Image (cartoon, rainbow, N blue to C red; front, side, top):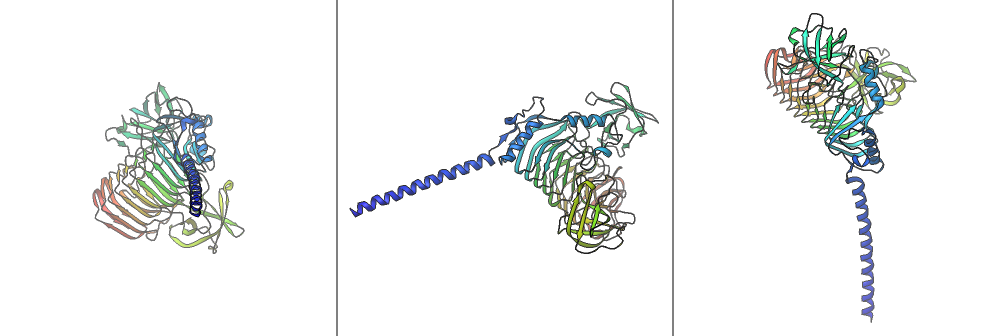
Length: 567
């Protein structure tokens, strides 16, 4: 009987254990399923009313989907292939005001100012762990806006999208007549034109050489419609430009196609940007940015992409990585990576008042830049751009409305502050550019003002400016001096023919832009090796000044009067 009692007790215990484990399994399975459903399973923008190819404005529906992802911790937002319209009345009104000269002959003086109000297309703000997948997707903007805005977010991936505009922010037409006073341009119906169009700059595309001409025209005197879709433009251009395409920019700077601001671990993968009334991508005060398969290129049949830089990164940290990207036809550099020289304007309660007083009167994201407590600042001689000493930030107060920052330091600066800049060397990202193709566009290919840089296995061809520049630029308030830069195994072909050429150099230039530029001590530890540089009647292949510890070796240089010059 005892044995039987023990057996019943044993089975009772076993049954209870089985029931307990079953309930735990159900709970765990439910929790896992909950995690999968909230994090791993994709939701579609179509579920929120964004239907591709229906010609209906999708902006609100897409942003509803984004809000749903944030509120429900969803990780994957899927866009079915097709065209999506991004439109807002304020964006359309802004575009029309610019085109109608209501913003003046240089709209950037109005619309590219700190905290100027603008419309966002996709508003990715305050998100964590979000992946947007849009292969075969075109985001078509109607009106001038910032198509993708990533702010105060982390671990964000944007994959596969193409960004373009319904009415391009530039116009392309063929030059059909040239005189000593004016030239005439014929446009297709794709680009509606009229008298007194805004045109701060006109680039020209050489159809014979399949590349941009070396020099654009800035602010022509006037323009007039002389017949349907034909403009007469009063400016002097060479007779050789006959039958070229005139690429009329209707702005310089505005918002970028993609903003990355106060964010970290952002991946832009297989994204194409065909046009934007500003830059392609701007990153500001962000950490770790990957661009893989990014293309800033004209749409097939066109010759221009973005109105200004393809990409631009300021005051970032961590690692910026370009991998297998392509840039063509933009109105400025393929990339520019730097921080800002602060002007010290006075004192307030034992703190130094600083401002960025560059020609644009702002940052490239047009939001305040400031250091963090514990950051290291270099005190820099304005005249030479040589660093004088390093100081540590002890306290920071920001005043965006005044466009100034009050900085407390671990030690006092010299009594006479006028000869000096401050620049934050803690916010300088490592930079790696590999396997990229940079083709005919205005200005320089790659512009470096950061430290710990590797540029390798790229092709840079027929940029109007120098192929690669390492440069501190006091006029633009962009720096600092670069250190630990390796440029190797690149092909730089027929660059430096006009606008943006530095020191008459085709391939690689190291320079200091200041009233009395230092001959050494600004840039340090540079290696240029195994590059192929082919100039086109160029003066220099490689030009170096303002630098210490430079190694130049194993390069093949042709088409340059002086292959290598070190000052």
